[in-house]
Length: 446
Ligand SMILES: *[C@@H]1O[C@H](CO)[C@@H](O)[C@H](O)[C@H]1NC(C)=O
Ligand SMILES: *[C@@H]1O[C@H](CO)[C@@H](O)[C@H](O)[C@H]1NC(C)=O
Ligand SMILES: *[C@@H]1O[C@H](CO)[C@@H](O)[C@H](O)[C@H]1NC(C)=O
Ligand SMILES: CC(=O)N[C@H]1CO[C@H](CO)[C@@H](O)[C@@H]1O
Image (cartoon, rainbow, N blue to C red; front, side, top):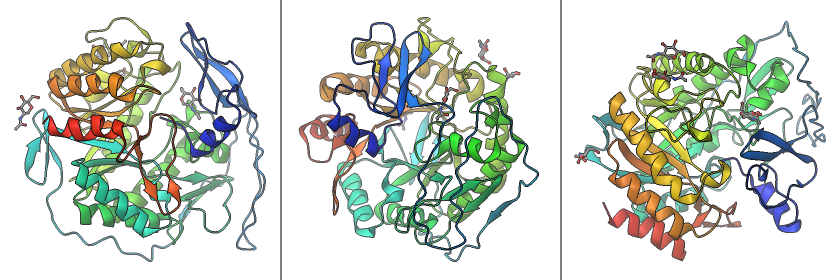
């Protein structure tokens, strides 16, 4: 999913306009086709148009920099220009924080078509919190971890990236600065030390983390932030030598910090990687290379892709998500031996499907996962209304489908020292009636 907190604030102010990254068209769409400024409604496929940043413009206002050496240069890349930079040096500042101390050497693993966590093979439920690594208050992180554990949720997926092209003002968390062909990793107090605390807290609360390394979408930088620094485009990023070198250096920085931690469930290549219109070999090769690289750094922890599950022949109904237009072949990629399990997401309303289509998608993947001999996890799912009525049947389907070994709803909501967390319409708040239905009752069912 790709909502950001800013979108929600804007959405509340201009209800007739679609928020950033929202749907604004497609077959059967009856809602608004106007996006909040400066986003424009862009065709994605016959079923889906989306509010995206106007192409070619990235006029970020300079922020107050905390050091005189901070450059706030803003570059504009166009899709027709490929920037060849002679300087592709990737530098990283020296880490001053040691990796968190491990309390156990037992790492989560697959066990046939199931997962084993702390020695227990079972179906597992979890959730997503893209924002937890960007919090600056340790007590807030601990509160969420405690609530997760108390709820019986064991797996939490977090954003392990926070890429910027311009260093934000002091107090705002960022992990990597990408500009002019260089990448600088922030290992300081407003950098990876925040992710360190998430890992430490997860260790202390028995929670296992899925940590990913880049976003397909431009929230928190993503591929677009690399393109701004290294040239190319969203689709050539996967084969851009300089961009891939920086991406791998970033992966190494994160993996090496937590490679001994039993709180890591899995490393994940990206959030929802797509390569629209590309031959599936582009993503296949990138997945194979990157997953092998991660295994070379850390052979013990699991690795997954983070894709939505697009591109599937098994049980296909021929509709958009089953097709190969986003450059993914689910079955083919799951066969890669350095990928331990499969991931799928479920957003029928964004894909031109009715909500009752959910079990069709889940069953098709379960069958493909059984054929591959690997477990799969429904790692994101959401619907903008009637959460319990719509999503509880998906959970039942996931639980009953062989090959689907866990599910993780999008997204966790809680009340922190700063107030309620981001509500993107899909959020399930701790203690709400939706929470009773989708967490308490679901966990009790297995
Ligand atoms: C995400 O992937 C799709 C498909 O390749 C692409 O159209 C889109 O631009 C990507 N998002 C960003 C922010 O680059
Ligand atoms: C997808 O991958 C499977 C398994 O490798 C293969 O049988 C199928 O032909 C592929 N489909 C396409 C469209 O690439
Ligand atoms: C493992 O998964 C299979 C298929 O989903 C299931 O039938 C079995 O009960 C699971 N085993 C355990 C120990 O959870
Ligand atoms: C094992 C497997 O199916 N590999 C295929 C994955 O995808 C690439 C690109 O389409 C093929 O060349 C491989 O044979």
